[in-house]
Image 1 (cartoon, rainbow, N blue to C red):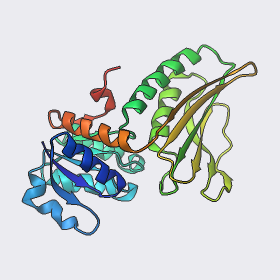
Image 2 (image 1 turned 60 degrees about the horizontal axis):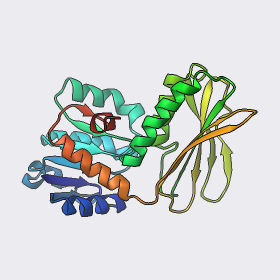
Image 3 (image 1 turned 30 degrees about the vertical axis):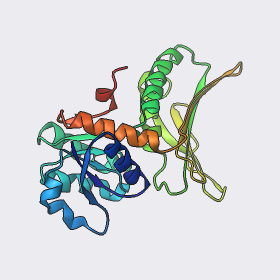
Amino acid sequence: MKISLIGYGKMGRMIEQIARERGHEIVCIIDIDNQQDFDTDAFRSSDVAIEFTAPHVAYDNYLKAWAQGVKVVSGSTGWLKEHGDDVRRACTEGGKTLFWASNFSVGVAIFSAVNKYLARIMNQFAQYDVRMEEVHHVHKLDHPSGTAITLAEQITAALDRKDSWTLGTLTQPDGTQVVEHVPADHELAIDSVRRGEVPGIHTVTYDSPADCIRLQHDAHSRQGFALGAVLAAEYTAQHSGLLTTDDLFSF
């Protein structure tokens, strides 16, 4: 399979390594200093482009890749609120293809499936309040993380007592805490922490006067995310439309 990379930071380099190990060819690498390479035969020859960039440029990268007839796999977050409807329309009505996930880790896919199942169970036990926390490295610009939002939306869809998620407390890299919102009873608070080089920790906590139930995924490195992105690219090469990890993994 021929793959182009959009974004060549730590994730891009790890994706390149894993893709090559799995026998794929990297035909084009696009970063901030060679945006003109979208309009090249090398990029157009791609079966799939894998995109990991910043929230403010991700959507434009999709448009540039689609304009060249190339399918996109993306792990960029932070663009959904502004461009989510446009992307859904492009993929359902405009014939474009995007495989998007807030987190490509196989472990997170399993964690997500367990999260949905646990939330359905906990809907019967109103004595448990629920909170979430996500911890990431200091270079991550958006908060809460896209993965945390996905997990929170799964919970609010299953719990009658929580109808929406909200920002809770942000702990900044210097340890300063900012209370961004005091959650109402019907809101699920997501606390965010930025420290060191943490690849990602997501924790869902159900707490009651009697006991506490905690579900947690702790990434040891970015390798799991990179492998998942390549697996998604292999799937996307053979499928079309708006794709997610629910299509790739059947739990």
